[in-house]
Amino acid sequence: MAFLPLLEEVVRSVDGALACSVMGFDGIAVENFQIDAATDLDVQSTLIEYAAVLGQVKNAAQLLKTGAVTEVSINSDQVLTIMRLVTDEYFLVLALSARGNYGKGRYALRITAPRIRDEL
Image (tube, rainbow, N blue to C red; front, side, top):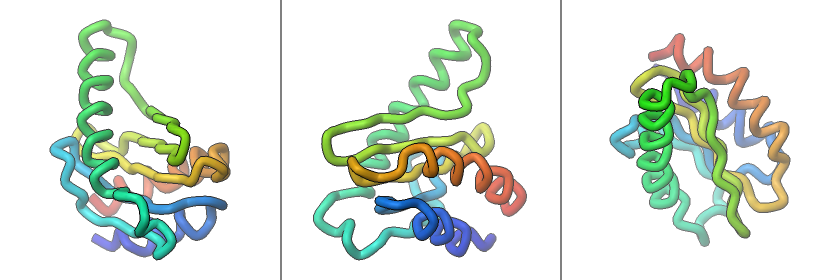
């Protein structure tokens, strides 16, 4: 499983990207790539907590029969977080600075998700 080059490609291609991870719904990162400038933020703890939120959203969508969740974003003052489901068990998550390119981040995850799925 060669996730690291794919995650690095996402981070390097999106302005303001801080980190990108393949994670399970248990909050454990399968693989992570983080730029050095992101060391002042506890990106990993943030992503772990957001994994729980994504799991709740996924379960709520199933309960309400609104269809499968494909993407969720949580935007705060300092960090924009985009999560895209890859399989029922795994998702991609991208953390951006507040001034990061949100649209390009969404696009990068959309085109990278099938490549990650193939590696799983």
